[in-house]
Amino acid sequence: MALVYGGRSGEHEISLRSAESVKQALDHEKYQVSDYFIAKDGRWSPHPLLPEPQEDAGIDVVFPMLHGTFGEDGTVQGLLELAGLPYVGAGVLASAVSMDKAVTKRLCRDAGLPVVEHLVLTRGQFNPAALELPFPFPVFVKPANLGSSVGINKAKNSEELQRALETAASYDRKIIVERGIIGREFECAVLGGEPPRASVPCEIFPSQDFYTYEDKYLLDTARIELPAKLSQETTCVMQQLAISCFEAVGCEGMGRVDFLMDASTGQLFINEINTIPGFTSISMYPKMWEYSGIPYPQLLDKLIALALERSHSRQEIRYSR
Image (cartoon, rainbow, N blue to C red):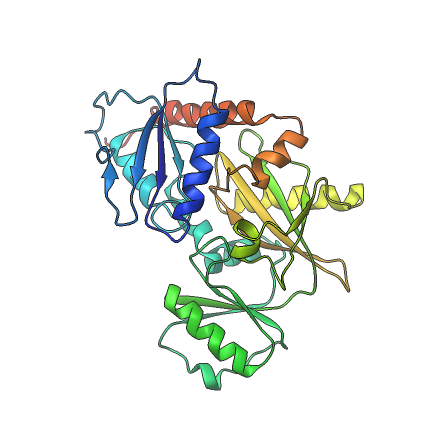
């Protein structure tokens, strides 16, 4: 098995931590693991993982443990498709559309799933100082294609909005401005298969104004409640929404769906889906499944088995007459 980690994104360090946790949890009597490290400048070590299609590369399956741009967005998945190598997680299309928060919201909305009111802006095609919002402050401003809350800011007035737009525009050409939801934050893990399954959800209690990058990985002060204190009915609704989101973007293998709940109405909104969720020692995707009855090593076995099943299924597809 090849474990690919590192990468060029701002989540490089998180990828290293996730990969180390995966290596420690794998059953080394079952798997012989080869490391493929991608440096921040994009260089591979020991070498790019790209044999000729149908060539025996000595690799049964690839586990991409890459977060963010150039790893979770379909680029590496496309490379692995070209190489004819089975790999864990979502395919090219689902990876790409899930990485783009604006496209994810559109697909969810078209599937009848609840998403927060928002605007999608393109860098250079709007004047931050003259932008008029169709919803009140506070708002959240996000780069469309980054994860781990990188580049996200909460704006409570026009001056803060302008600064937030400038920050987001430095990370991406596409920017999302969405109505701020005052309420609760949840996560729910999904495991692929026929049919996909959803875990028991957890609730996030940020130590800051919202769940920032620092809160997730540096401060160690956010609080997690697993299982989330929800009624059985609301838990079931959240689990079904998580599966519906997973299916709406065409996801496979694994996904973590993040939710917001409006405190005044109790309405749930799908915030985003992560196709390669964190696997660090504090990451909630494996913890939610462990609480739901699938220990970390067994979870990895299932993800690898799903990757091999998909590969065998695709061998039956004809690509020429």
